[in-house]
Length: 357
Picture 1 (tube, rainbow, N blue to C red):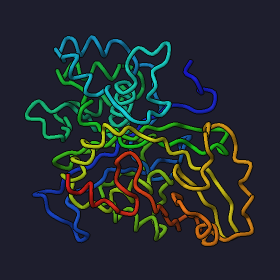
Picture 2: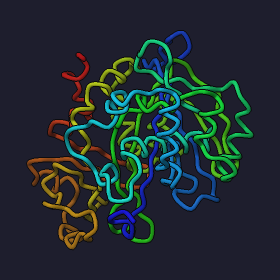
Picture 3: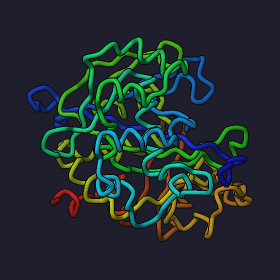
């Protein structure tokens, strides 16, 4: 049993970007699209919400059979070390504990890859040619049958790579962020590692019927606008990540940023809530209201402390802001007046140093 398992479950998601055909720019200037889907009413977590592909960690993601596969494919230890050697802050989900068979930087990636295939039929494989930083989606096999067999547990995900003589793309899956469900959601909490993968072209998608109502390839701006207009709903992590991406219009710049920031690690984001006179605030690390030495378990006893103040008045009192103001289901404002954490893209687009990479 992993520490904190009684408080939250581990999960992983992958933000898949794909270059537009002929590298064309859309009406907002983006040369890429993002893959998202709407969950069905059947799903137990975030039904009817727009999400990136992903789901809960499974024992097969931590199987030593993967090490056997890497050995048979003659993947050198040094290649795996480029995935597992990370400096900077390490969220709980990446910390190896007694009983773990694989390094967590590998097993959590395998979880993200498996869920992406189970939900949308997108199989990401390592690029066998020059290492461009982009991943490859393999589609020339019986995707539907394998998807059903893996999803329903008749076959292990590893067996698919074995049959195709492919390697899961651990290297083109960039550690992007980690989000934790706020503590007041006691019944069901997750720590979710988000990865980013980039494709040089939009790939076919085969949605799984039980979990996926519909899928879409859209630009970050179009998704955010649809959220603001009430056409769809984005949970805070999806909204925050799409805002980060929305300020960068070139997929090649995003890949360069993803490759360069690896050495900085990842600070976990667990929003801490405060009620205000005109809405609700979710504060994030670096904000003056964020608790010191937060343990990700203890409820916020000060949640109603500033209930007589407006969100604007609360913001004016703070020197350091990193928060999301919620005025309704589809009305959010991101505030962050400091540098982005861990060398990442800034949610408000203050990315000039990174864009020169």
